Image 1 (cartoon, helix red, strand yellow):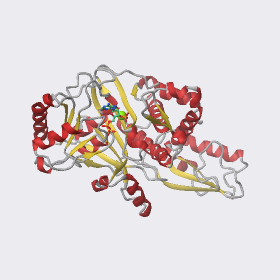
Image 2 (spheres, protein in one colour):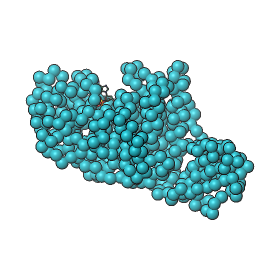
Image 3 (tube, protein in one colour):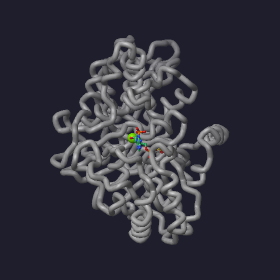
Length: 458
Ligand SMILES: Nc1ncnc2c1ncn2[C@@H]1O[C@H](COP(=O)(O)OS(=O)(=O)O)[C@@H](OP(=O)(O)O)[C@H]1O
Ligand SMILES: [Mg+2]
C-alpha cells in the first residue's frame, strides 16, 4: 500500500482508491468518487477504520487493487485533544456550516421543494437552518464536552418532529451526516458512525440555553437572513461566545459575500453565471468569506471559504480587515436591511440627507452588513425596526465584536453598548442599532437621530 508507514498515514491527509476490479467503496466511509470507491481520511481512527474496511472487502495492504494517495502534510493535528482554542474551533465549524449552506442553497435555487418549510410566523426555514444548528452544536459538544457547552440558538425541534415533516427530517439527517463526514478536512473529528434521527434532534434541541448575564454560552444564528438565503442572495452563519454578558469572540460566515466589493452591486444570479464562466481557482479568493475577531485583540480577520477537496490549515490565508477611513459624510455609504418590514428606509433616508450622505444605500440581507462595515465596504449600518419588535442576541453578537475589533463603534441609538446579558433579547435597546466606522461619524448619526426621531412616527 504505497511506501509509507502507518504513522505517515495518520499524520497526513490521504485518499484510498480501490480499482474498478472492486466496485464497492469501503463500508462506513464516505464515497466521494464512488465509481472507483475512493475514501479519504485524516486521523489515526479513520486510518484504522479504513484498514478494517479494506480487509472486510478481502483487500490487504499489499493488494494491487488498492491505491493510497497521500494528499498533503497536515498543517495541524486532527485528533481530539489537540490544542485548538474556542475561536479556532468556532471558525472551523462555521467554515463547515458555510459549505453545507452553499450545497443546500444550490438545491433551493434549483427548486427542491423538500428543502423549505414554513414556520408558524411563515418565515421560510430550510434544511440548512436545522442542519447547521445540529452540526455546530455537535462539533462544539464533541470538542469541549457536552456538559461544558451551552448554546442559545434560533431553531427548535418542534416543527421538525411533527409527523408530516418526516421527509424534511430525513433531508436534515443526511445533510448533517454529509457535512460531518468532511470534518477531517477541517482538522475536526466527525462521528464514528453516522448520526441517527435522535442524535440529530438531540444536537438541535440541546441549543436551548436562555442566555443571561452570568457564565458562558454560545449564541448561534444558523442561517441569518433566511429571506436572502431562499432568494439565492446574501446570508450569514453567525456564532459568538458570550461570557458574563460580554461577547468575547465572534465568527461570521458569509458564503455569498464576494471577495471584491464591486461584486455586491451585481445580482446574485448574474454573479453565479459569471462564476460558472470563469470558475474560481484554488488560489483565487472568489466567493465566500469567514470573518472573526477576539474581544480585546484590536484585530479582525477574514478568511476565504475552503475550496472543494482542499484541507484546511489554520490560519487559512486569513488577512486582517479594518473599517473604512472615510470621515466625510459626502463620501460615506449607509448599509441597511433589504426589507422595509425590518427597518424604516424612509427614516434612514432622511437621516442620510440631514448629515450630507449622497451615496445610494447598500442594502444587504443578514449580518453580512456587519461584515461590510468591518471590511470598509460601507461606513454606517443602521437598523430601526418597528416599535415593539425585540432584537435577538444571535442576530447581532458576532457582528458587534467583529466591527469593534476592526476599529468601529456599535451602540443603540442612545449611544449605549448593546446589552447581551439579559437573555435571548436585546432588552432595553434604545430605538435602533447604529454601527459606524469612526467615533466622529457615529456622533453625527446619533445627533441626527435625536433631532428627527420624535417626528418620524416610528
Ligand atoms: N419585523 C422585524 N423587524 C426587524 N427585524 C426582524 C423582524 N422580523 C424578523 N427580524 C429579524 O431580522 C433578521 C433579518 O434582519 P436583516 O437586517 O438581515 O434584514 S433583511 O433581511 O436585510 O431585510 C431576521 O433574521 P433571520 O430570521 O435569521 O433571517 C430576524 O431575526
Ligand atoms: Mg437572524
